[in-house]
Amino acid sequence: MKVAMKEIREDMYQAHEFARVAGVTVRTLHHYDRIGLLKPSGYTSAGYRLYCKRDLVRLQQIVTLKFIGFQLKQIKELLNPNAFDLVSALTRQKEIIAAKREQLDQAMKAIEKAQELLAINDEPDWDAFKRIIEVITMQNNMDWTKKYYSKEAKQKIAERAKTIPPEVIEQGQRDWATLIREVEAAVAEGIDPKSEKAAALAERWSTLIRAFTGGNSEVQAGLNKMYADKDNWPANFPKPYSDEAGAFMCAAIAALKDK
Amino acid sequence: MKVAMKEIREDMYQAHEFARVAGVTVRTLHHYDRIGLLKPSGYTSAGYRLYCKRDLVRLQQIVTLKFIGFQLKQIKELLNPNAFDLVSALTRQKEIIAAKREQLDQAMKAIEKAQELLAINDEPDWDAFKRIIEVITMQNNMDWTKKYYSKEAKQKIAERAKTIPPEVIEQGQRDWATLIREVEAAVAEGIDPKSEKAAALAERWSTLIRAFTGGNSEVQAGLNKMYADKDNWPANFPKPYSDEAGAFMCAAIAALKDK
DNA sequence: CCTAAGGTCTGACGTAACGTCAGACGCAAG
DNA sequence: CTTGCGTCTGACGTTACGTCAGACCTTAGG
Image 1 (cartoon, rainbow over the protein chains, first blue to last red):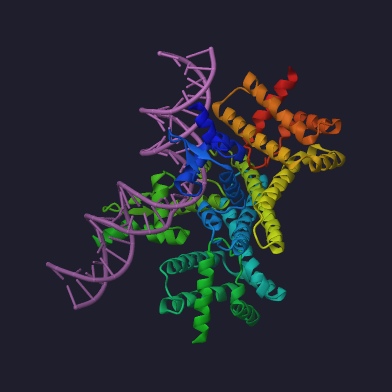
Image 2: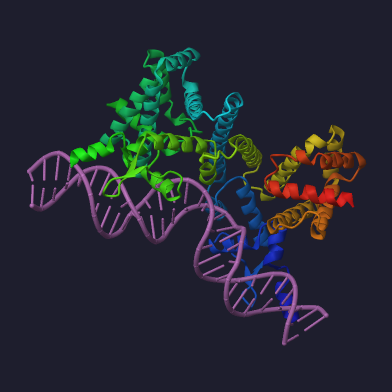
C-alpha cells in the first residue's frame, strides 16, 4: 500500500509541498481550485489534492500575472489555450497602473501640503485641506487637457480661476461631480451616445468646460483639438471618471457637433 | 402641516440633496450612518434622514481623508474629538502610499520587460517572465539594503548573483518566501523576539542573507550597520513583508547578537 | 380621491482574494 | 492507541459601498 502510494505520488506534490515551492498558501490552492483557475491533476484515495510539474508551471504563470496586477478572472482568460491577446492586455494593464500611480501621487501631494499647513498651524484647518484637494484635482484636470492647450491658454485659465469666487468654484465642482455620476450611470445603462439623453449630458459637459475655461477662443481651439483627437482620449483618465465614461462623452460630444 | 415641515427642514438637507452637494451617493450616506461614521442630525416623522450644515462639514472632512487614502475606520478615529494624532497618521500614510507606489513601479517595469520579450519572440516565454520578476524583486531587495551597502559591496553582490546557478537562486527565493511567511505567522502569534523560536528564525534569516550576499566582510559590515540602525529600518519595506515582520526580525537578530 | 412619478427606508446579497476558524478525517511514528 | 501534523469542506470576515427587492411617503395632476 505504502509502495503503491509512493508510485502514485511519483513526481506528484502534496498540497503543502506544492504551496511551498510556489510560495503560496494551501488555502490559496483551494481557492484557485474552487474558482477553476488551477485544478490539481490528481487526488489520493482520501481525496487529497495532488499536483504535478505542469501544475507548477501554470501556478508560476498565475503568480507572475498576479505580480503584474491582473485579476484572477483575467488571468484565467489569459491562460486558456485560445490565448486571449496577452499583448493588448499588457498595454491596457500599463494604463491602469499608470492611473493608479497618478492617484497615489495626488494623495501624496495632498498629504505633504496638509503637513505643511499643520506645521504652521497646530489645529487641522479642514477648509484649507479641502481647497488643497480641489487644487490638486484641478491640476489633475489640467494634466489631461495639457496636451491640447497652449501654454498661454493654460495661463489664462489659471488666472481666471483665481478671479472666480470660491463658492462658484465649489458649486462648479459639485456640478461636475454630479454630471460625472450621471454619465457613469448612462454608460452603465448602455445608453446610446447619439441619443437625446446623451446630447443633454454632452451639452452640460461642454457648458461646464466652457465655464471652467472661460470660453475664450484659444481655449475653444484646444477643446476642438481634443475632440478631433478622440481616439487619443487620455489613457490615464483622471480618477473619478472611468475610461468608459470618457469614451462615452467623447462620442456624445462628437454626435452633438455633427448636428 | 406642509409649513411645519418646511420649518423643520429649515437649513436641513434631505438625503439626495445632501449627497449631491457633497458629491457622494445616498447609499454612501446610508453606509456611513450604519457604521456610525456620519449620523444624520435629524429625521422626518416618516423616518427620512435629515442632514444639517455641520453634517456637511464632517462629510467633507471624511471625503478629504478618503482622498488621502485612509480607511473609514481610521477616519472615524481621526475625526473623533480626542484628535488621535493626525500628524503621525499622515506620516504613516505617506509610507504606505510610497510602498504601494513601489509595487506599481515594479509591476510597470515587469510589464515593459515582458513587452520587450514579446516584441522579439511572438510566443510568451513564461520562463523568461519569471526570471524578470525575480530580477525585479531582487533589485527591490537591493533598494532597501542600498543605504547600508557601499557601491563596491553591491557590485560584488550583483557579480556573485550571476555566478550562482539559477536553480539555487530559485531555491533561495522559495526559502526566503517560506521564511517570511513563518515570520509573519510568528508575529501574528505574538511570539517574543527573544524566544528560542525567534532566534531560530533570525538564524535562518541571517543565513539566507549571507547566502545572498556571499558572506564577505564588506557585506557583513553593511549588515551590521543595518542592524545597528534598527530604528531606521526601511519604512517602505518591500511588499511581501509587513512592517511588523521587519521590526520583529530586527529585534530577533539583535537579541541573537546580544547572546 | 386616485394615481403616477420620484424619493426613502431596510435588509440581503455581491464584489476580490483569500484568511481564519471549526469539525471531521488521514497517516505515520512511538 | 495516542500524538502530531496534514487534509478536507463549509461558513464567516474583510472593504466600501452597488444593486436589487419590497414596502412606504410625498406631491402634483387628472
